[in-house]
Image (cartoon, rainbow, N blue to C red; front, side):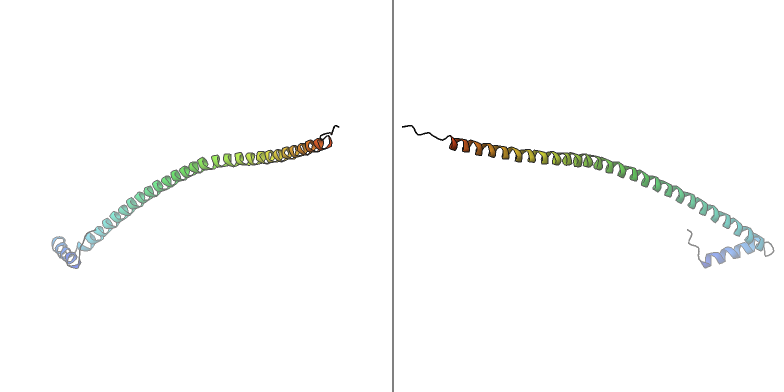
Length: 128
């Protein structure tokens, strides 16, 4: 925070010694140390409160993103399920249609055979 080196501290100490005097200097140093400790503690508490608030906001943002992901997933999954059910129904219907077509082909070919046999059996009669 502050760039205070050794010589700056030594100068402050000498000035304090001259101004306050050697008898009251230890008590002044103790009081200054307590104030500095309290100030550091207050700064640490403020930093901690700010960090908690940032973390809470991050968690809220993550929760919102989770909700959005779930909504998007539902928007994709529901139509996909509907499509799969439709395709499955169409496939089942397609199987029965294919079976019906095969049966119809069989009936048609049987009918053709019967017609051909009938025309052979009743074929042209020769008249004299």
